[in-house]
Length: 255
Image 1 (cartoon, rainbow, N blue to C red):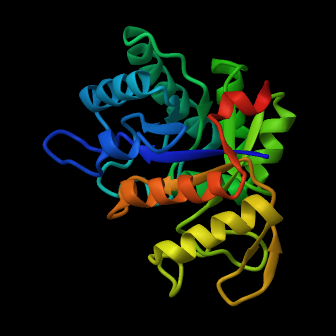
Image 2: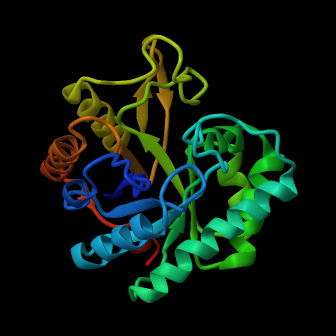
Image 3: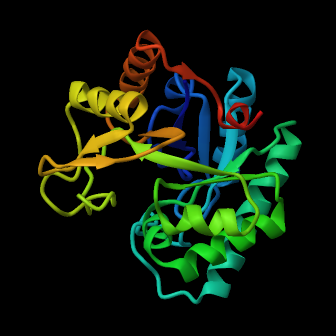
């Protein structure tokens, strides 16, 4: 039994620092690096890639809506071709810096509102999957387990990774509970670890109101901007390994 542990990171911008990437990356196996759309700038992107290289963490792209002011958490009224082109530009920017650092990108995971919309809207999911396939078919597409993005990735001939969350609550249909609703975020570390173990060992999660929901996942997400993210990641990894779950980077899951 193996599971990837990923973190959203590289989300600082200019003089604004968000998260402790240098510490949290020591405890995960894959990194989703902001590409300048919702966060990140060339210096931050390159620094984060260098950290991944030096720490042996698999690096991937984390494209979002081009919305620095809203941190990519607002759904912009972009047409599917505009979304595809924006994703391509962000992938190209990160790939250029990755080459400079001798890093090979392994995966793509959309961010924020783009991720949420792609989970439910097949047209948007197809636009993202199509952009990834055009850019590099060897890249793994990460999406919410059971979502339209996973189906679109498969239809585009991509390897896909089904993602589940440690610090987010679920609805009974397997979707993530919207951030603005009560109970959407899991702040208690022990509860988050328990949720991760339930997903990894039993393939199920409790919805925010207590219903059992089937959920098969390949990778678990930690948000790097969460206070204490590094300590949470360390505790989660230790709990998984003690439970007999091997923690491996995404590419190793497809060997």
